[in-house]
Length: 196
Image 1 (tube, rainbow, N blue to C red):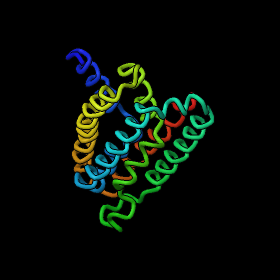
Image 2: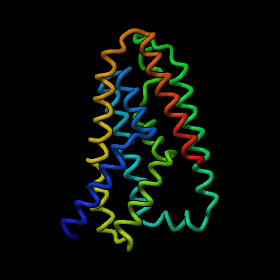
Image 3: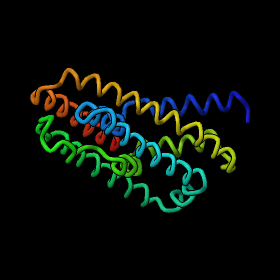
């Protein structure tokens, strides 16, 4: 494997991980409301959930998906339903910083499951595997995944850090509600983009 291929894989992983998407918005919102520790737990779950998805696609899941087109449609609709549920939770959040502190905090499992229902994660996995490991050789897939893992975690970590900074400016329940409603609308809007 050449250095230029490793560089290309890394840049692809960076662009896919850092660009705004549902997981990025939940990372930002969760850390703004519940702090960096909670945000990083969510990010760790999201990263590991994505890597498992990526590896399974790299090792042949994409062949099954190609044969059974209904799976793609079902995942898309489950993903949209899950994202709309998260949007609703965020939109109706009361903004109280100290009320039942961790009842709705994003968890490790939320992050992992969210990636499996996230159309952006499926698209990044399918297109990345197709573009950079067309022969689906195990060594290539493993190298790509080993590059993707820290890049994904650090990229989502940036969103957590931004959320923590924003959280300092949204210390009142009213301001927190405004931020949550804005992020909820953006998250729901991403569902519209999935359908278009």
